[in-house]
Image 1: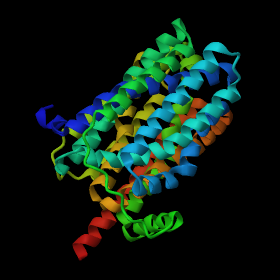
Image 2: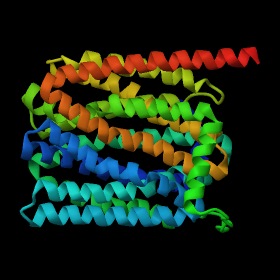
Image 3: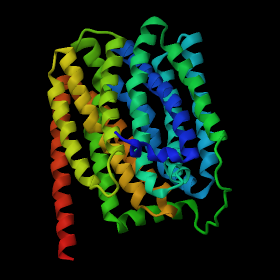
Image 4: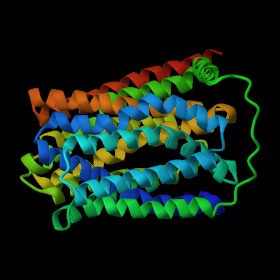
Length: 407
């Protein structure tokens, strides 16, 4: 690691954003870990774990295209400020529900739906605004990689802390911590010095702009294929995390702390992977890295699936996290560095649909399948599917290179 790994920090606005989000995301992962644990403890059902994922992420799928249009039509800064305040309110409601009431699982799931709707507008605005925060646009890919390291560092710390807090103080304290953590990101946004927003004239209606985004993807098949690749991974492989409570409670005979350690091991691998990406020199072949890391992802899942020894399982969870990280980070980097500025929000909304939309469907699929063939068999199958998707990606990539040579 060298100083160039952090070159995006030269931009003041990005430094503020990074510091505020770092604090907030730890709270977010504490809340996410607590929700999944509560649902599994209350229901003892892998299918209900899938439902918990579905209720958070499927609303993001439904509204993400609209969120992309809002990001392109309006002031992204104000949109982001609004979504962060709304997320803080959602966390507050969850805190009050669990700490002061006899809650039911369906009430937690309804608040998950609210968060999913908020995220549909938050993700396109937040991802697209990174471009505006970075002064030197050559540092954009570095900023995106650092963003991913921030998310995965939170994934490393948040679940581990949540596991301890769940046992000692209860889920309500986890939700309260998340509520308070939003103050950091809201403050960082208020301290930013961004260029004055100039409203653009929009001659097309919302549906016309949605169609324009779709037409853009049809005209740029290389971007369309990356989004399709992410959709397949999100549907068939990434939902493996849905089954981690089963490993913690049933396979390893553990408690909330073990669940936190499993999540944190994946986060450790992901952090290592994002630091690796941030250290890459400009111009590196990101598609090749995406292919290799997808293979690592699949191998890690296959090795983890039937591992009964916890320390060795944690090691393979780290390997899995390293490979998993590329699916979102590299895809996002390729999109952000190649898509036109005017279309960025809408294309990112399709990216968000592929990521948020397929995972909840995959969560239901994985939860249902595991109830029939068992959790280890399901994780094994997901690892094999990751390898098959990587091979398909390699075939299309070679075909694309061959076409370029012919031209």
